[in-house]
Image (cartoon, rainbow, N blue to C red):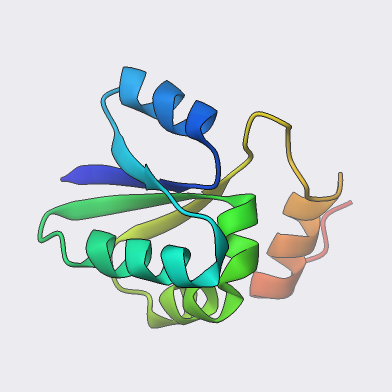
Length: 103
């Protein structure tokens, strides 16, 4: 099972390559969609990493993958500038996903 990265910047790609994860840099919607197609064509892909900025450019594709429940596992990661999500991202995500409020 392999992992693949779709990044919006070269620095994140280089870091993941050092960890043995291949990937591509994509800017804009069209390049991001092409990168998704390329990644999803991989037969043994288990984890698809995407930077938050890439995920923001193709929210429909990200939503489609999450709703399908099929492999690969989609993981959004921050880039070198840090997370663009709010501090309460995880609790909001859990609340939206399963309706449980964490105190």
